Image (cartoon, rainbow, N blue to C red; front, side):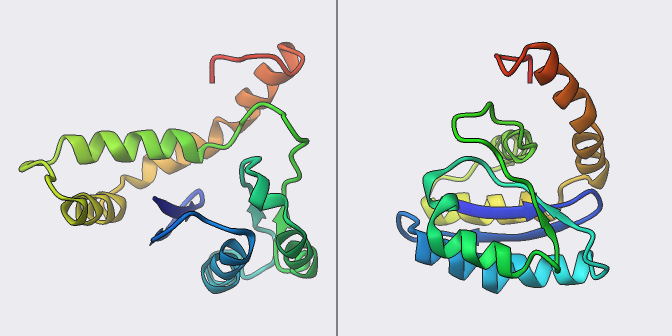
Length: 152
């Protein structure tokens, strides 16, 4: 399993997770990797962080940390059980497709991780921009569906 972050113009780190993620481990990732990424890419404090509705993302320690860093970047608050609108899922799908197309294909877990990291570094920036620019359409579709299923 991996944790990743990206924005309109930059790919952030792709972090290998050795075990099931806990709230404390996620807090470590945010403080060690997200904070530095956001401070470099969005040094003006105008960056916006979006995550999915995983339970550990709402843990007390994570919520407190995000509140403490609210002047460094904004955090989208998603209501519980709300439809997933995070573009990272589409980006991950494209990343896995790129790994599947590699020659030779990865055969071991370490080969797969190496292929993931290589594909992540080779990801075309235009794809990220297109994904980010799709957000207004995604939200409009969600509103039309009144929170129900959309084509995204």
